[in-house]
Figure (cartoon, rainbow, N blue to C red):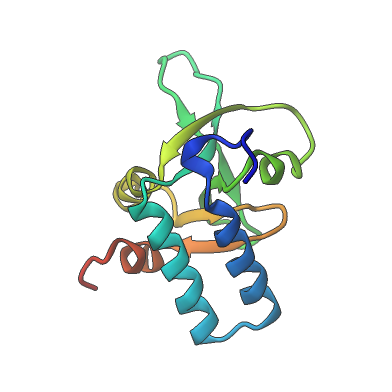
Length: 139
């Protein structure tokens, strides 16, 4: 095990492996497996890395928003610092956040569709329906 990994990020390589499998074989079974792996990491007090935009005049911290080609807005989260760095570009302010807290907040944010995990490489787009599935909420 890599001792340089923050405790909350340990185990997230399993999420990356599951997403890699899903990218190779896009089936309902692989999607269910990937969501289960994310849920397990969440229940083990797992964390994601989130990028934040510098506060504007109101002092509020905002999560970085990624717009997809269809014009919809998503929050970006990363399973590891390696994944976050694959985006290149400018260095962003990042924080660790509990997976469940990020998902719960995403469900209440009307301005976004959901969370894109690892938008540069091992990517999965978790819309609010999939987030509810991971959280075990009645759908």
